[in-house]
Image (cartoon, rainbow, N blue to C red; front, side, top):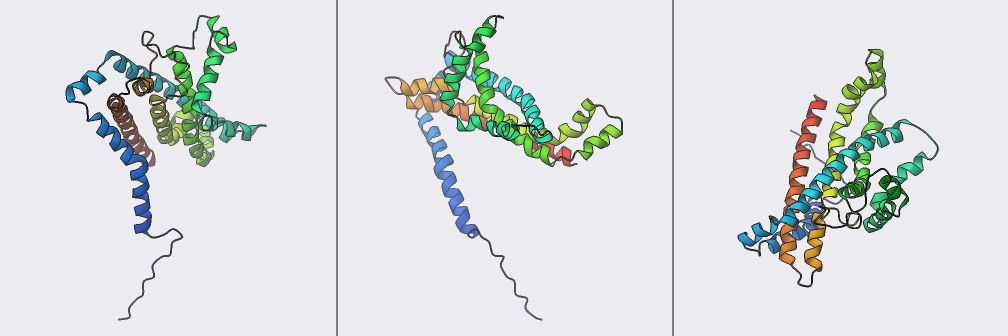
Length: 282
């Protein structure tokens, strides 16, 4: 029998061993080791000290504020993110490229600058804040202000997750639904929404996780008042690091709980996304 020579496929990128080594090294240096250090510092506390710290009134309130505000902001981002992505994909209009580029602005703009700008706009002396207070709505230094800041930093995640899906979705599906007598709402619910649902869940999860851990854009507009319930988790962590007696262990313990909460939320959302994808493909 003739021996058949098998040629290895040439790759532009170096072989598997080298690329895997680089990947593991970068993953360890940038993610695994820093996360392990958070756990190491938090474990320096005794179990009693750890429980006392994370069940403190101000810490529990800060977690509740961060999670609730981030969840509401992520829901708002999903609604308006779908609308923005739809407009950018399905319509042509003057300034479309400019609007598409402005979606990335929260990524490029320092979050502290965004926080200062939003605080000035929605404060008593700002034109938006003054107008809203005229109808009895106070934004700056309230949880409403926190939600607005989280909407600002989270909207790009939703738009950029949905936009590619809408670009690949053929309009013939919608036309077929209309020809079969489906209304616009039914067409969206039965044809379009199932296709964008996995991407929407991805955008929701990313916006939610970003909002829970956000610091720069909310630190100014929130007012950081424990009495008014406007302290967020990131502020509590920074308090422990900026105090005269720096408490690394306490900050790491709160950061560890924040890490676990964010991981669990992303894990659940990824499972829901996987289930939605399987249902759509079926």
